[in-house]
Length: 157
Image (cartoon, rainbow, N blue to C red; front, side, top):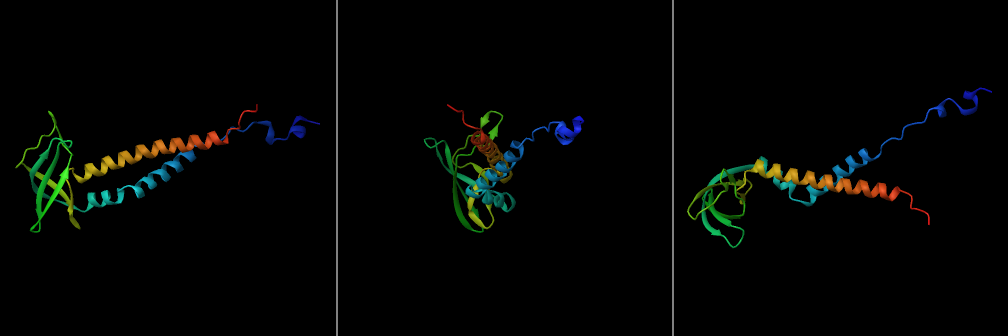
């Protein structure tokens, strides 16, 4: 009897184990990212990025006791609105400082002009996407670790 007859041709070379975690991690990443998008305000932020307009606004109040939040009044189609924001664009000397009476550019949603931001829509979308991706990566890593830790046999005592 030859070696091939006893062992079999297929069992002669050991198969390398397939890595399961990359596929599991990718699926978990997509799941967590979509979950964050549904639970968060991601759809609204995307809508804001694609369907916004800008208007001139005037700072009516600065609240140093409330994270330097500013209140800005602006007008759209003859109707007055007010937005409060702690967003400060960065300048070469640090975060911008606002004073009462200062003119600012406001970005608002065309379908709901009362929904506005001092932050440019593309910057808002970019930061939301980055935060969601980082949280999804952390969540996917944790889920993958849980799956592999659960599959690991417990030590016998």
